Length: 294
Image 1 (cartoon, helix red, strand yellow):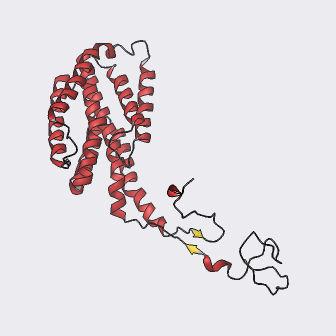
Image 2 (cartoon, helix red, strand yellow):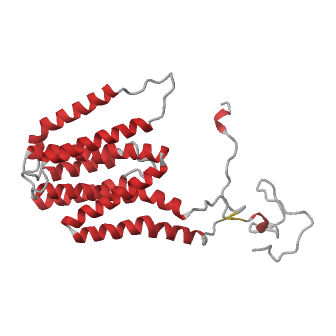
Image 3 (cartoon, helix red, strand yellow):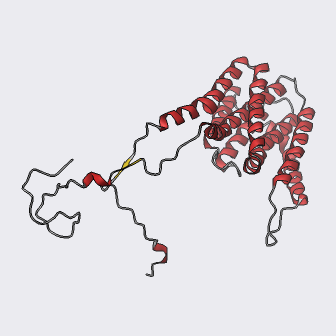
């Protein structure tokens, strides 16, 4: 791109609009491309750093797979609700202890949440869930099983799509509500009210409390976070193998694609990125207008 072939006047060209100049409207001089800037502010990614961030997507996929596996075991009578409740209680207490160990010390101006308050919140939730379990058990009696399964699959997909992977704690309202809705739909197809209560308690532990613990671990123990993600992914694949080998193969393929292949493509394609900036871009206001008096 260069100047027009018109004879050059004596007055130099200026890139202004408020004064009349003896140049065509589309005139540019030879210095036009001197202000060209390429890939300004481009972030360079490291492969294993991207794999670590993508592991959050993989572990959330595995959490959904573990939840479906537990539901399959309970529906087929291979897992009793008492065993699931004791397992959920044990895992919940271990996770609560780890969360308290990693929780930062607060300043004197802030009152930390006490263990008594946490116990009261847990007791209230468990009491209401246990009391409403017979109602939730019969919630979808008038709905066909195929419709319930379709709604559950759609809500679990909405949970995965809307999950705040950048800041997993607290869980987004849409993501959490979608997961709990799917849990209620699936739990209503179990044999008894105690099965429904156990399944909903497990769903709260997995979809609401686990992201809070994972966020704390990622912030203060990155190495432990990586091993937790690997363990959850292996647990998801291993659980599905026993009940649905085809689903386990699909999950393994999805995990490999999300956590290994996609980061590799991102790093490889980053070298081909070519963004250009120059005087043709829109003007950017640099002045802070927050302190300008009106």
